[in-house]
Every structure is written in structure tokens, then in C-alpha cells.
Length: 73
Image 1 (tube, rainbow, N blue to C red):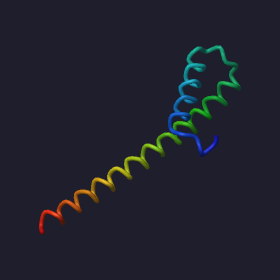
Image 2: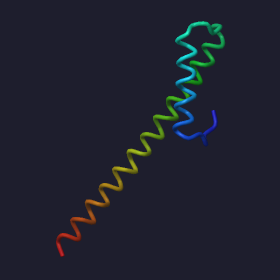
Image 3: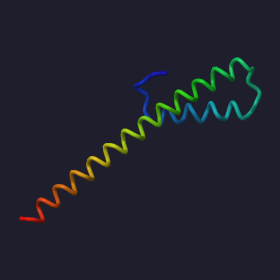
């Protein structure tokens, strides 16, 4: 899996894999390959979300810190 995919691209691929697997007309070996790719995509998306959460938390904490400093003057 390419690491330079956007979150949206990875999610779209994951949705396609899920739809194909839900249809049940995929040969077993291909289904296993798709399942493994789906797991990789899921982990990749989870990592992006976790990074975004960390960034937002850091920004909020910095903003709160700045506000506290500005308010005390």
C-alpha cells in the first residue's frame, strides 16, 4: 500500500474492498488478499486520525496556554 494516499483515497479503497467482500462472489484466495489489504488500509487511516487528533490537541493546548498568558497581563 502506498503511504502517500490521502485519508479519503484510503477510505474509498477500504469501502470498495468491504463491498466486494460483502457480495461474497470473490474467490477465497482473493478474498484473503483483499481482507489483508483492508486491514492495512484500516491501520493507515487510524494512524492518520490519531495524528490529526494529536495535532488538534496540541493546537488547543497551545491556544489555551497563549490565552492564559494574555489574560494575566
